[in-house]
Amino acid sequence: NAGVTQTPKFRVLKTGQSMTLLCAQDMNHEYMYWYRQDPGMGLRLIHYSVGEGTTAKGEVPDGYNVSRLKKQNFLLGLESAAPSQTSVYFCASDGAGARNEKLFFGSGTQLSVL
Amino acid sequence: GENVEQHPSTLSVQEGDSAVIKCTYSDSASNYFPWYKQELGKRPQLIIDIRSNVGEKKDQRIAVTLNKTAKHFSLHITETQPEDSAVYFCAASIRTGANNLFFGTGTRLTVIP
Image (cartoon, rainbow over all chains, first blue to last red; front, top):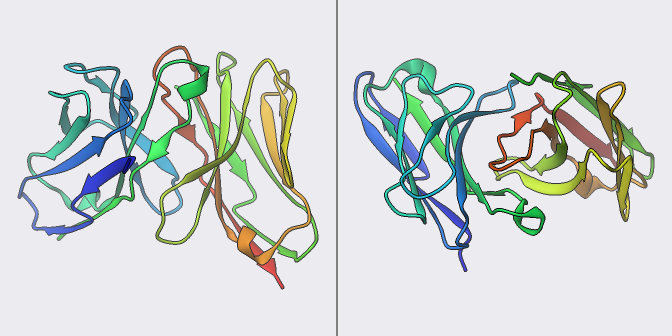
């Protein structure tokens, strides 16, 4: 049981390049989330999903797209990276019901856009 | 949307003393308030949480209090230890399905041996 796994752990992009971050969870969780963390600003929700085939916008969705083709995977895409997207990205998941509402985070992806 | 404010941004205490971190929220519909601890370079880890139908919750040296009327909640750590040094985040959400958390900006706690 690996929990929430993110790949890659580090990435450097040039402005305008594209990339996809992969998040996988093996806990059969319904809900998955992508957050970004910037110094002094805490974590902010980018997009989330309430189930396979669904996605929704969070607090800061501009410049990102997501997909959830399989229940266990949640992909975050940057179509044209900008320096403002330099951040640490965390994926998270949790389940339905009071027993499963603990949010599990992945280990994070450090992304630098030059 | 929800706005969560957290104070102080930094806090230094002597080992064995207590530490208190306070948060306020804006949306009276918020009903779930977790606290996360994040060590340098690591992922956030849930340390305690509270729902709006409870005023206080305690887990060993950690306690959280909630005042729904004033829309603020606090984290209390007693008998602090050097391993408590980390950044602590409060958060709030309207937990009816997905857990869309709004986070505070964090408090860097340093416990001085």
